[in-house]
Image (cartoon, rainbow, N blue to C red):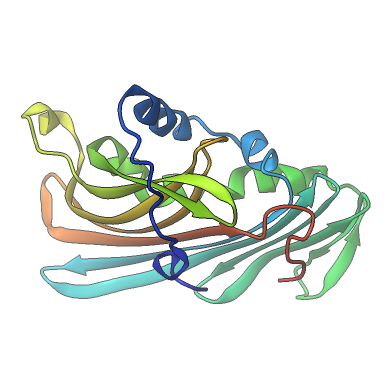
Length: 227
């Protein structure tokens, strides 16, 4: 997967700011898969890599990948991997489909609805990576850019200053850095490259680092096919 930073485009001359930008940012947190589908045909590639450090020593590392080619509710391809191993694979076309079975082979499925349900759950890679600290992230608007002809808002991410209200927060953000691109029309997160470090109160010797890369491309009827 190409890091999102390699797909970044030049900032547009328009440096919009103010209430409209804040409204679009807030709307991006309320997105459902129905809003994602409204983008039309497109391709998603996302990965979340998680590293756990205990007293400065790495004790755990795992990664999850999600790959989606979306053309419609009856025409999509979804793959999910854990540490490079394929765990889920479904290919649907014209309302008929095949899915990865326990024997490691693809078999026809009589009903696509369970796989559509999994799709509704799998698309959100932001929450598993950053959900516990999302209220502690500051978004600084960097201007607007064009991504495959779509106008996007670009944000730099960091940790909000602690105003003393985090005393009841179980998970505490230590550092956040990266960039997020949000579609100005649909408010969907189109690209992100974010690294976050966090710890839990009472377990400060244990640090978790999450690295999220999210890329949506290939918008329109010519979206790429095949994963």
